[in-house]
Each structure stands twice: as structure tokens, then as C-alpha cells.
Image (tube, helix red, strand yellow):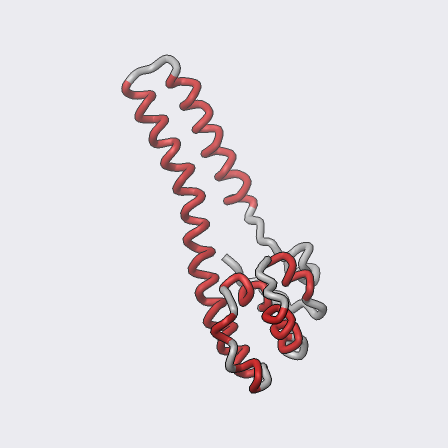
Length: 144
């Protein structure tokens, strides 16, 4: 990621060892356990349940980390908005949803007031839509 500037098109984080290898191994284990459960025994049923639990654990640990990250971004953006927004908008910071705040974090301080005004006025809540509106993309390479 550090080799090229971050943009909307390349900002999603993909960790090959987690998103690729670990998921593949857990999914293959689940398929294998389903196959073996047809030969039904107590042992294979337990293995199937463990395989399901491991796959759920894979997805939930990612979701938990992203939720914590969004809470931190929400706080960071509220502080940043209080600093850069004009007085007429500063009083409306609490109106922004988490999705709006998380998406606007990529905007520069200079474009943030106009973007924030448009997001509130048009009630834009879709993360991708807001991110695509950012003209001067500010990289965030410390994502979970």
C-alpha cells in the first residue's frame, strides 16, 4: 500500500494470510467435515460443529475489530469536524451517522466543510457514495 497513493479504488485492506489462507483453510475444513458427517458418528458431528464455530470466529473477530475501529474514527472525526467546520455546521456534528463519519475521513480539511454540508443536506448515508465524492483523498493506512 505504501508503494502507491491511496485512492477510493485501492483503499480496502486485504491481508492475504487472513482473508485468503486462513479463510480457505477454515472453509476447506468445514466442507471436509460436512462430507464426513454423512458417515455419521459422534466424532464427526463434533468436528463439524467445531468447523462451523471456527468459521464463525473468523467472521466475528473481523467484525469486532472493524466495529472498534469505527468507534475510534467516529470520535476522531467529531473532534476534527469541531475544528474545521464553520460555526453554522459545527452545531450539527451530532447529526452525522457513523457511516457518514467513517466515509468522510478520507477528505482533506479544506474540502471537508463542503462535503459535510452536502452529506447532511442530501442525507447521503452510503459509504461508497460519500467516498467517491472525495476529491483530495487523504490516505488512512492504519485500518484494521
